[in-house]
Amino acid sequence: EDETQAGATAAAIAGATWDGAEVDVAQHAIAGPCPKCGLTAKEAEEQVKALQALESARPELGEAEKKVVGKWNPSGTFEVVKGHDGRIYFVGIDDDLDEIKGELKPNGEFFEGMLYTFDREEIGRFRLAFEREGVVMFYRGDVDDDEWEEEGTPAYMDLKFNQRRPSTVVLLETGTKMVKSD
Image 1 (tube, rainbow, N blue to C red):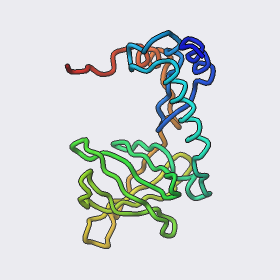
Image 2 (image 1 turned 45 degrees about the vertical axis):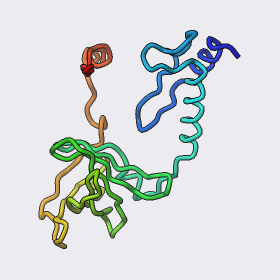
Image 3 (image 1 turned 30 degrees about the vertical axis):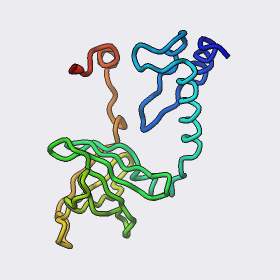
């Protein structure tokens, strides 16, 4: 199969995602490596097939998990995901924009656990519970304390309630999003 045909095949099965990012295989329908990512059409097709295999192997969510798994936006953004190991994880960023992560285990109406820095340093406890459709309430706690914040913070499912104006969608899709440093 030549590179152009492989690219056409990859374009035909476009739409695979990995961690919410869409894989654009249509751009690889040219002979030779893509100037943007360096993949050949055949490599792009193989990547899409691998992503589709992962997609079909995603673990199913239980009823309680369906209410909290997703991307949430309070004053910042965090995600709650179910890993291939069947466990629930929090993934977010701290004030310095470094990744923080931790496993959340069910405890009554809550999913809760310890959060860690990239270097596996404990930074605090986190718990969240379903509040209503598209809304969870989260609470923080200190590492060495059994107490939780008295008042929780609501977090809203990403893109659940508000939609962007068509002109904003075009702007975001066609505008420069990040300047790469050399």
